[in-house]
Length: 251
Image (cartoon, rainbow, N blue to C red; front, side, top):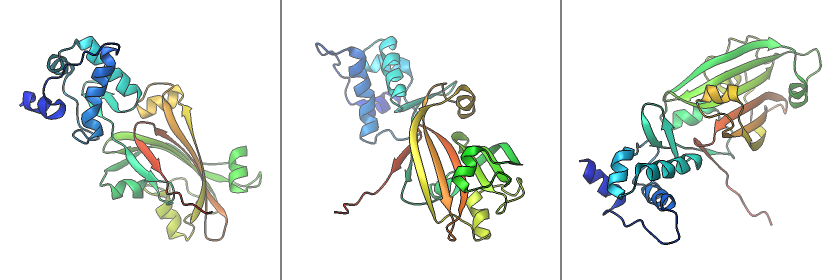
């Protein structure tokens, strides 16, 4: 059965020796091919290194280097004690204002959270600027690690003016659902995205190596009355998301 799977993924045993090209790059290309054409999809496990080496007629050192390169490219992900898997990616549109819960539920994912902080306090400078607050106003902060199907998928720190949510423990699931009940759900938002290297504390929470590239997003959400009601900072593992947007020619 293993032999059949290897043949299904890679075809007949390949001659991977090509003059002038490092062998590990040829192996990398061979492993990536069934991912590119859909024979391996997000969440699928890669055959064991030993079997890949035997089938492709290369050393395990070469297989390991090729896999390491694909892990760096965020095509593959490794889970300690479980093996090597094709990275699962969530396609998230940038032109629709939706919550993490709504996006994952649409994809049939099981959602859970680990609360890191729920508190009421004085606004920091960035919160005052984003939410148009005075120095003596209060904000409620919700900081949590978000999971889908048991996998860490995002760190999310949301700040809400206390006039909209006073109790830090009022949110259990979707923050947007609670704001919607009060008629204060954001109807538009300004988002700023950039790639950053993650610090050791957040890397540990997301179960990724320190200094890994992650996508950092700041979002300020505005309700129908044109008042800012949400200032959220999120950290997304780079191997988990594709952010897409539809662009139109306005000329």
